[in-house]
Image (cartoon, rainbow, N blue to C red; front, side, top):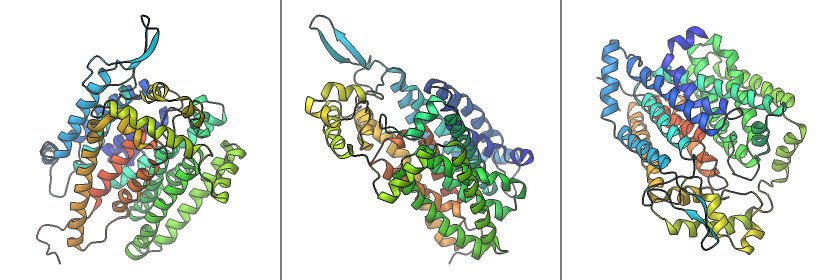
Length: 464
């Protein structure tokens, strides 16, 4: 494994950066996670420009020049750099807070230092800023600096590390770690579940299994237990039942193509190897759950599927009440929003006694997760998230059309994006998990990797 990491050093750095929040959440607060992401982004950027994958016929200095040229001519790079500056300004403009006016004996929400600019409450804007910068480093490397094998290695190492993080979180919860126990409860306080990030890496783990079989990475085979079983256990333990159901559909859609790819392209009984690896991995994941997760957790998740009841009783009433409150708060500041971390204050100051009858105690996020994005970040914040996504989808579409002309069979990694992205979008209609930094970073990396994985016609090769 040491030689494998040394060969694919940039892929290893990308995997560590993408999975770092999953390792840190049981032990550290958001500020420490943000500082860690900032420091990890530096070596990733260095490796991107100094040690990129070398294409056939290139020298290392040619590869460095190519990556630099492609990066600085990429519109997505400049849009994301603008988003980094935008989020940095929002993190610094942190004056949103509850204040008391002694003259009129009344509580109110204090305005930020720059009222017309995007704002945040306290330190809540620091982690999104760090995640935005880390995502820029991830996407740039995945789009321009990774070769074919390195992309597959990135899928492998990121899913392995995510599975290891899931195993650590499960055992920490079993030992009474407060953050891990709270994450396992999937409480309705913030409606943000770390299991969504594990689910994204579970899809990447399936891609990694096919890549390991195709490239004959035999020494990495034992690690696939974490790629598949560990991430599956993390998804099941740290997300509500409906999330597991949504991502199960995404996983099965990629599995169907992966089985076809192994059967028709790889040959040599590759499909049976894949099935054996998946079977052993899921068995190990189940053992991990049995060892670390309480029996009541497993039975409650299973009961949700058996009874087909995935949402709590209070959900519909609370969703209606908070939707009205969120829209009211957004209309007060439609362009820049009320500030990151301010939704709890918006509820407190806008709710009526009848609203409190429908809103569960402690709930600080909307059951319709897209409202939190609109209310806290406004139209400007929505644009800063939508524009990079649109550009990445445009690249995906262009590469897809190029693949159609090349008449080559794509690897399973090409379809990971169109499986993961709709699943994450679907969760936004029930909770706010899509705004987690580990989820956003993972989705961005998968989109960039999937688009770059499409085969291209070689120069001089006739199409169609």
